[in-house]
Length: 350
Ligand SMILES: *Cc1c(COP(=O)(O)O)cnc(C)c1O
Image (tube, rainbow, N blue to C red; front, side, top):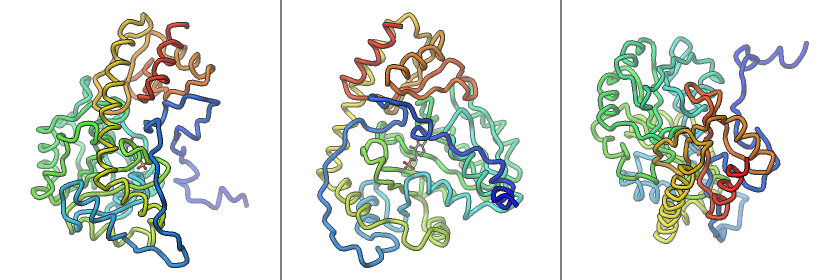
């Protein structure tokens, strides 16, 4: 018997997440994974590794709680925001339940649900990339977790706060609402963390991978009320956070680390504005979508051609051509000034 036939049916049918790294490419300019283009420096403080780490490193939980303006009991640390997404599904969904999400959006909601054998319902975003609340309400039967992403990946759109509170109202007592705030540092005033006191079924996914420039660290968080956090504590692995990870994460959340992150954010926003102005002048560009994050979604007259042309030159972007409603669109991460200049030059010379 072939090994694959021994694996679970839903795993046999599963298409793994097409991560930027898996998609490959021979690049010297990587603008396809929404990373920060430069790495901060750290010194490892802990130099002994013979003991297991704390299950939830206290100093890190406290530091993130301070940063997010919540209590430590409202925080669980995970291996990247991606593990937060999967933990919520594993903890809350059983066989006949479904998750609901709103494409075009982040691919991991579907992949995590499928991995767990949980059905997916989709309610596409409106033309303005906002929630279609009447349709979501109609589709809620059997739904245990609703995933929304704000700012949304790959569109860059912020969901309207009034829509998010309406969503929390229509799901109360029925489903968990996960607001994915992977990019919230680029528009911190829009966080839903301030609503935690009102909504026991709200969970917020965060990460150090984007504005904190630590994608290689694999450190994320879920923020929620204690009862929800306690459920996630039951299913998370016993020692999920390696000692060097919490060590560096605590430094990233120090006063100095936070001001470095804020400087990163300002630089990205300056560069984003520069890119928008340059892109506007290019005949190949059909539309630049408003972005509240460290990437731009751009519609080209022939997106496939632009993507391939830049790929061949070692400039690796994220093609969105097959995403719902995003034909000819490319998501490009804001890079350094020099990288952004090369992107513009390369498009000019097509
Ligand atoms: C990057 C990202 C995450 C989480 O990334 P991790 O590296 O696993 O922390 C979650 N959601 C969205 C929308 C993202 O873009």
